[in-house]
Length: 61
Length: 395
Image (cartoon, rainbow over all chains, first blue to last red; front, side, top):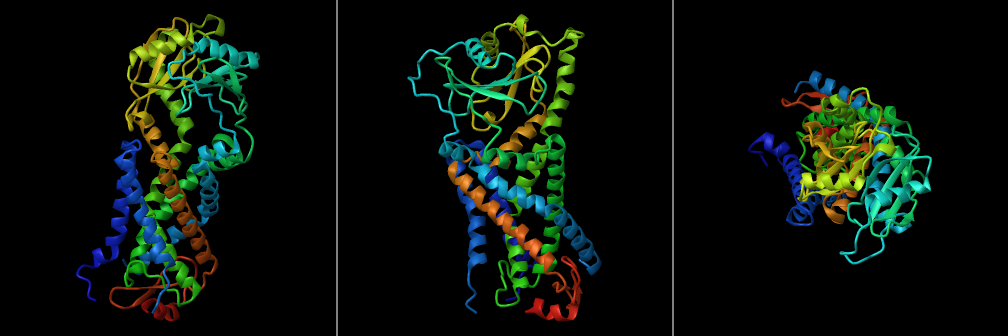
């Protein structure tokens, strides 16, 4: 597969993970048991899920 | 990026990480139980709780509370009084030999309604205390703190240089590739890159806020010099206001509340202590909103007259310090966030451990294929064998 843009191919996912983490870290600061906290659980949970998915996955090839 | 630049960044990454890794591993491991210190305290029964009483139960005067606490340690002075975050039925009174900062403190927990002593918790012993001290200052006071702060700075350098190196290492690979069927070193290199880049922002935030926290003592000293000096001009030449001449602390607290309604008490610092001036009882109030509850508003109350002298706005550097605390502790989003914090901490331990492993297994480092297909070796973890490794990296 020929990547359309080398930069996004390399940095797209890392940037997405960084943005999610940033949103989560900040949103919970402005919430006390409310929606901001829940947003943080999701946005911080996704990078962890990515770690587990790629880190534990057995290659079937 | 040409091979010389890669080599320079690799050198920076290698040495910044090598120097701080052992300490970072220590911080990550001791930090793990500290994330749950509240819950662990409940389990161990070391957490003091006030007995349940109706919300409208009349409260004892703070002066009476202090008197009771002092009677337990007549030879000591009160430095601080505070209330736990979630329990206003309780006062914690901290008593020390002098107002100067010290490790030698006694704590008395007094019921805020009955003014009875509930417990004399010992905060300077036990498993959690050891974890805490190892995490904060390695049992070495301010020099220990500043040393760990410097290690934190090296971690930030290692993170930045690691990001720079991510590009030459991952250019030919799909995101998330872990080459398991090759040599173990290659698998751990891929895991190091994957976990490192995914947890990047979290590690950077926790690392930098931790570093900022190591400067807390100095920042507070500077605040005294910067903001309180001017307020203290009228008191020049006077000694620390003697206990016998001090006005009512309850009255001081009421005066502070009158100054800033809609706020809650965080703690009260007594004259001559590090958070106050020699002539003031300083009441630190916090806001009622989720965000403002993390910030403090100092109200300086004249220790003799119990009248408000000033309520200087918190300067930016103390605001930065206070906001950096929840971002380091991960205690501001409930239990799910604490669990996420712990898991991210474990991911960081794996990144640190794999980095160390890659360095120990150096001698067969991985080459970096350059854009035009020629190979150059990135000497991150030691010597290189370009020809042999090049094949591998291309696969």
